[in-house]
Structure formats: C-alpha cells, structure tokens
Length: 154
Image 1: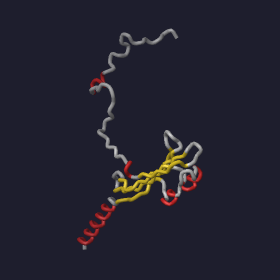
Image 2: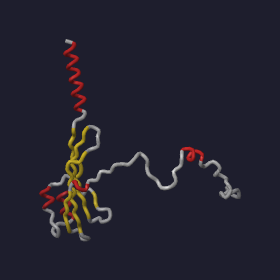
Image 3: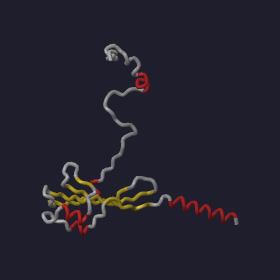
C-alpha cells in the first residue's frame, strides 16, 4: 500500500514540475483587423477615420508626428525564459500636414533585432584605473598646490 502511495505522489510531483515548463502563447500590442487595415486608402481616409477603424496608434513617429505605428506581436514563452517572437505585424500609416492618409505600409518579423550584450561591464571612454588607483587616487589632491583655497572673507 505504501509503495503505490509513494508512486502516486512521485507522479503527481513530476506532473507539477513539468507543468511549470509549459509554453505560453501571448498576444501583445494592438489588435489589427486585416480587413479593416486593408480598407484604409491614401487620399480617401484621414486621421479621424483611421482612429475610428483601428483605435489610437501604438506610438507615433519621433521625428515625424504624421507617422502612426500599430504594432501587433505574438510571442511564445517557456516558464521564465525570454519570450520568442512567433509573428509580428507593424502597420505604418503616414499622414500629410492636413491629416490625410498618404501611404499605408505593412512589415513583419524581418525588422526584429536581437541585441546580445557583450559583457556585464559598461564600456566607457578614458583611462582604466585599477582597484587601488580608484581607492587611493584622491589622496593628496584636496588642498594641493594650485587648488582654489576656501574663501574666509564672508
């Protein structure tokens, strides 16, 4: 009897451990309806009609506020690992100065960039100092010849 209880507890523990490594699929960003997005026509639509169709943009252009970006992303994530991008859609709607649509562009996952940090240290310009130079480097610099003396005539 004890052997079957022990086996069932071991199986339950393994099921719990494996369930922690399950893959989660998530949608992040804007929900872009393909039919509505394909209905946006340059020269016909304006900012108000695009806002009614797709909602507020995910972000606007930094250097040209007439560019509206709608970003939609599907990612898979296993436990606590970094998510991997399965599908990405970026819809760029460009407006002229009067607020009329001039162009609609659609891109995908090809603009995803993985940045791999080179090390745990931030590269800096200048001379590298040793531990002892950092620790004892300021000794003798306070009140050294040529340094400004404190004012006493206040």
